[in-house]
Image 1 (cartoon, rainbow, N blue to C red):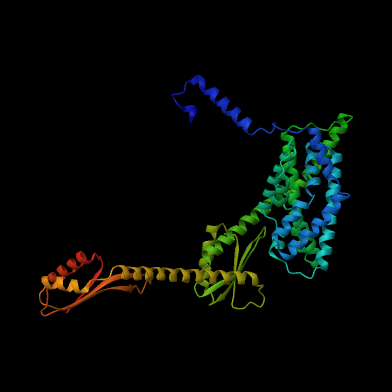
Image 2 (cartoon, rainbow, N blue to C red):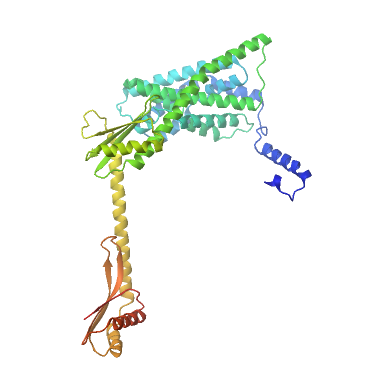
Length: 464
């Protein structure tokens, strides 16, 4: 480090540290281009209300997002993100907590509750009358929150409030935040759960919406406090203290359960990733195939269930699999292997199709690669034989000078195929018949002469 460099005088080292700190402070400062506090608070306050155009825009966006989820179209869902006005009241909650404005918090909670109710009602109505009731992949992705959803929502909230606090608004930040945080599709998925009577989908999707909303509000609160926004003034210190205590009591009621549930989401995400790696790395069997696996997380006892087709997997092999599970942090996970009879097993047909399609593609690619290699080798052989024809008559006459007893001679370049690697190679085959038997030394002399004369490294000499 520069600090320990003996070439730098001791008196200059504190100056270098100070300059370095100053450079970092200036580079990451949020004071530059900061908008007036009152303007920022007023802008966020205006975005809280859901009435008139905001309410109709929300309804239209919910319909668009529901259609996108129904037909499994990411482009349509992205368009609904850009239309949705859901960010306003959520950021209003964080702003209200940051400046101790209880009235703003109450107004924001009232409006986000209204927006959630309207969104659920609209999406439930759509999915109830829609002729398409199959849960597509885009819809299923919103039924189970992960730690990555919460992290994206938190970082998106940070970006949103930082951009909103600037004098010159960054035009691409708010649309990007709306797309990344994905507030609307979980509400649509919850409506799908209500319309189809699937309470698991409803609970998982609505929980994902709540987690995203809480993370955005926390991010807004942190930036507001970091920017040192002034606290709202009250007539007396007693009222201010009572308001502050009320706000923080409500925050604790929300944050403590959310923190516990967030911890469980982290555990669930780690478990699912570990199960996926275990199946991918260890469950490649000969004469049998994993057609589906289910990683079911539970706080007490998680389960990894494998569904196999093909020859039954012996008990010894199953025990070997269990012995390998601790290496994937699955030591407390119960392994269940279902094979043979699938009467009571739910088989994911889409997963089976995907697995078979992947295997067909891999086999086809390997076959095409081998054929391409053979074609290239044959092409090289043809080019070689066309450009370098052997002068058999000249070779015979020259060899007759060296070995006058030669009677028959021929030479040709031939393609030889390896039976194991299926790799072709080019060899020059030489056949010669003499009137007398030659020694091994004489044969080697002929081979060396042929290599030098024909510039061929691989020669197969057949002598009679």
